Image (cartoon, rainbow, N blue to C red; front, side, top):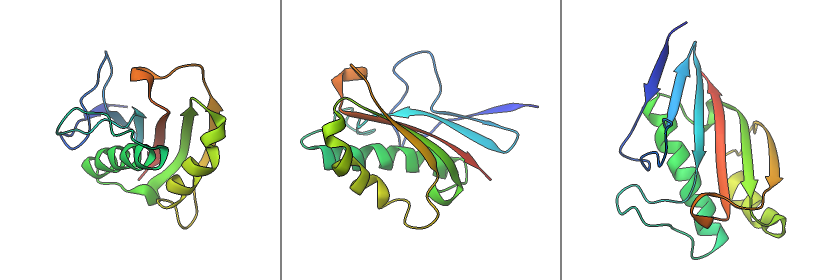
Length: 126
């Protein structure tokens, strides 16, 4: 099985030794995304709703580059700094999965890259 690196300028460049996504055997593995604006490099984190929407926009850009969309996502992992933000994150996240949402877990963690409040990764199948 071959693997293809998926890279787009519409999502933030990796800040470490990883790729935005890898397509292997029809399955897309998207690295965790935070609320970095791809154009400015600035964090969009004035409030948790905006931050979550930016994360989802970054995921969407990567999915799109691979010829996929949110309807192809089968699993998401959500990492949050404060589970007290769960309801707000869940509301924004849910706007991208109106029908047949994927499997997922949401985990509270001590710290995330650049001290963001939320990071989301996903797996999609074409």
